[in-house]
Image 1 (cartoon, rainbow, N blue to C red):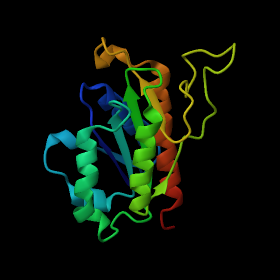
Image 2: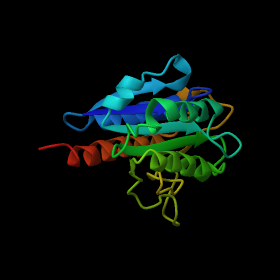
Image 3: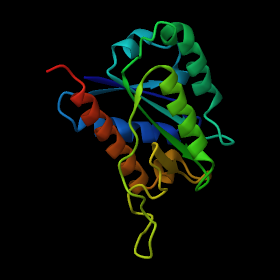
Length: 189
């Protein structure tokens, strides 16, 4: 079972989230994660066609996905959309921004809409919001309270190695595992 993670990462923060998603995929027997950075050169459309699921990731810049991920979305029209090559594949998404909110929901909505246009089946986050009570903390999973996908936050003045907190990375890992488990349910017996 191949699950591709197609992402952009301007400063390395979103790449760390992608790695956490991949780690979660790796926890499911028979699942293989393939990290595909859109900035690394020509897209491997054949691998994406062979993938059982595709997870999209992007930083949120000014309330939107990055220009590089948007370009990938546009390039997929000829490569995949016209022939509906991704129809019935599982899809999910994650995003990171410097601000606590940062209008990240708009980025996830953009990813989900893109997946819907390809006939994909979107998998959201199945967790109650963390850090939402007097006994909660930033160490809670899903501390930013998203259901559509994973939202993470990293301080803009810190390097990717220290900027992301453990609860955000664990939430991303959970999404990877959830997508792999869901995808396995759609595999032929």
